[in-house]
Length: 208
Image 1 (tube, rainbow, N blue to C red):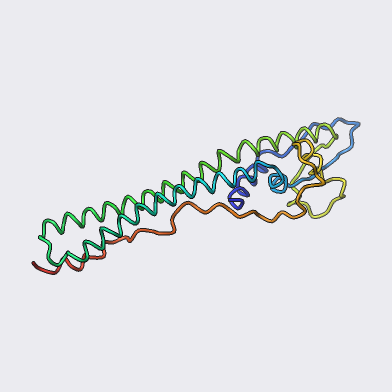
Image 2 (image 1 turned 180 degrees about the horizontal axis):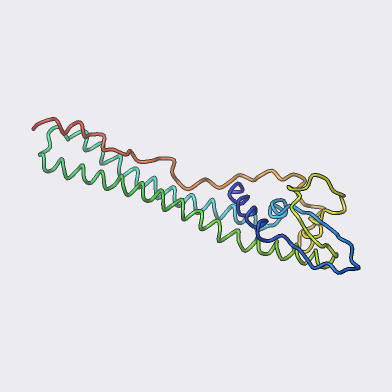
C-alpha cells in the first residue's frame, strides 16, 4: 500500500510545493519536510491500511469463489469429455471459456477498484498535509518548503516536520523515529490467474 502512496506523494510534490511571496526586506528562508514521514505518523495511515486490506480481502475471496467454480467444472469436463456427445462437449468448452474470461475480467476490474479505493482514501489526507505545510510556512516566515528527499545538506532547524505534525495534532516527541513501511495491503487479487486455454481441447480429437 505505502509503495503506491509514494507515487501519490510524488505527484503531490510536483504540483504543490509550498511557496510564498518574498518582500524586499525579508531574507530568503527555506524549510524542508517529508510528506511520507508525516503521513505515517497520522492515525489516518493505519485506517487507510486497514480499509485497503479489507477491500483487497473481499476482492480476493470473490476471485477464489470464481476460480473454485472454474476448477470444479474443468475437472468434471476432463473426466467425462471422452464419452460426451460432441454438442454437449462443445457447450461445456464454451462454458469453461466464459468462466475463464470472467475471471480475467474480474482481475482487471479488481486492480482498478483497489487503485480507486486507495486514491479516494489517500487524497484527502495529502490535501490536509499540504494545507498544514503551507500554514506552518506562512506562520514561520518560510519562503519555500521543499522535500528533504531532494535536500543534499541543510540546517537541522530547517526541518519543519515537527511543526507540521503539531499543526496536524500529532505530538512530534511520540512520532516514529523510522519511516519503515507498515505491512502493505495485498495487491489486487491476481494470485490465482485462470488458465488461458481450455485444457481439455486435446480431447476434441477423440471421437465418441
